[in-house]
Image (cartoon, rainbow over all chains, first blue to last red; front, side, top):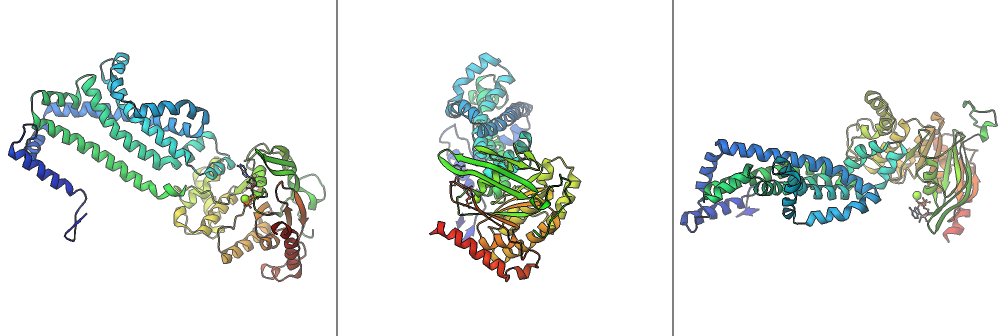
Length: 250
Length: 267
Ligand SMILES: Nc1ncnc2c1ncn2[C@@H]1O[C@H](COP(=O)(O)OP(=O)(O)OP(=O)(O)O)[C@@H](O)[C@H]1O
Ligand SMILES: [Mg+2]
């Protein structure tokens, strides 16, 4: 973006929105929106509390575990679906259904199945993230250059070699794209899990702050969460760009 | 045949007729399409045989059947007396579209065949480096395919096939992606390779001149369903050096003769 001939750094529009927030907050229009400056002061304060750090730890634990399973299961399943017609026909309808299903409605079922603890939250997180990861890995494998597969075959590659040395790498740009979107969905999953299943982590903080009308605290935690999700997503986007040089040359 | 080679320890048949690869009564149908019908052809050991024929006549199909990448509808392929059931270390394929791993450096690409055969990393990189120099890509070991020109990529594919040291090299229009100067250089290199490496080369090309220039034996294929219509063995000028072949009267005659038999299908 350029303004009066000056190149503005990326995301400078955020400054504008931040200013607007501050003004609306200062006018005291609604208790729901305290001034941004106040929120930031609260944020600095909140970050140092034990309650926040415990919440961060619990959330990070469930999030990382959930994403881990989504990736470790999702990528191989997606690759296998892209390769085997039978598996594809068996699983694809389900993957599509779950991708667009309102997963939140499933959370009570998960609670019945897996209890009210961390396990159910992790599974919720995985369920939010995994479908898009599967679909993207599958799409990545589908567009693979046939002659790469023939080449590996002609040099005597075992199925395992073909999997780890051809299919995975050929699909990597799509896989990373899927992981990035999956992780954004996992953030949603972990918070919904924490709100619905057992009140722990950031979910507990949101619950506590909004019940007590601590809007400054509420926004502060939300900003932290957004910033974390944004950082992870940007990091993956960066990895994606690193491999995109070959995306159109497979 | 005036340049017979007799170093292979096989039963003492006439060396000139000893085949490294034989295809027997090969037919191949793609659904309704009959690509090959009852095709039989012998590929003499240590020589270069070209497959020449109009586009779509089944040259790639035949090459892939020999490679074990495609199954014939009927008939069989023998390599060194053994029936082919799939790809094997006795054959290496040079792909028309290079088939390089875009995420791997030149040296990893060249070493890929050795990697699949379980050669330890240090050794396979040594051998890969040797063949990279051999094809004139010294200094590009760590470049990536997208940083190379079409002709250079073609040579990476060639080095990969050479480095596994297979007895039979299957080359599908390996010089299609290069300009005329490079093409001529490659053809000369190929002649030297055939002379020095005692391998059996099976070479697909569209170009009559190229086929006559590099081949010990040229198989002319008819349009679909394809059979061998004619086998030509340019022998008279094979011992001449590269520069003189193109001026040799026999060379020019054979080019004309092949053109005469192919033009009926073009018209
Ligand atoms: N996978 C396939 N499915 C259906 N038909 C095919 C398939 N592959 C090849 N064919 C058909 O078989 C015939 C022979 O194909 P092939 O690729 O072997 O020809 P070619 O001689 O290599 O042609 P070119 O010189 O243009 O490369 C063609 O008519 C083609 O349409
Ligand atoms: Mg072809």
